[in-house]
Length: 252
Image (cartoon, rainbow, N blue to C red):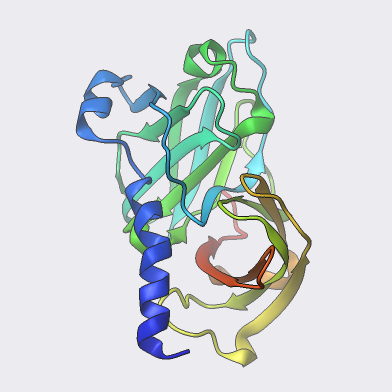
C-alpha cells in the first residue's frame, strides 16, 4: 500500500475519534460542575471504526451510596496540555465527564473531587462500565497518560496497564505489538519490539481489552507504542490502530 493511501486511511479513522474527544461548547456550559464538566449527552449515530475508551494503570472499583470521591493521578513527562475523559464502555445512559483543568506541570498531576454519588449514581453507571482516559497533548496524536483511579489510597505499584477499545466493526482475529519508544507518526523499528499479544474475535460494538504487563517495559520511564493489526469479520479487511502511553514505574 502506498504511503499516501496509508495516510488517507489513518485520517479517516482518526477524524471521528478526535471529534469525539470533547463535547461542544453548549454542552460544556450546561454541564459545568466546577472542576469538571459532567452529565449525559444525546446518542450519536455514527461510531468510529475503533476508539480507545479506557487506559488505566489502576482502577479501584467504586460503590454508589458510600460517599466516595474519585481521584485520578496521571504523569506528564513534559507538562503541558492534557484532558481527562470518562464515559461508559457500553453506552447506555450516555454518561460523560471531562476535566476542566487542561494544563499540567511536569511530573505527577492529580484530579480530585469527582463524587460517585453525583452523575455516576444518578445515571446508574457501575464501575465495570466506566472507561477513563487521559490525553497527553493534542488528542490527534493518540498519546496517553495511563490513569491511576482510586478513592481510598493511591496504588503502591503498577503491574499492568489495561486498555479497552470500542470496536465499530466485528473482528475475527488480530495482534498487538508493543514497542519501546513513541512512534505515533512513524513505523516502529523492529529492534524496539518488546512484546506481542494475540487477539481473538470480538463482535461489533464490544470492547476489546488489552492487558499490557508493565514488567517487559522495564524500570525506566518512557514512551511505549502499541500497534494493533485487526482483521474484520468477512472479507479479511484490515484495521490498523496505534497509540502511545507513557510508562512511569516510579509512583508518587
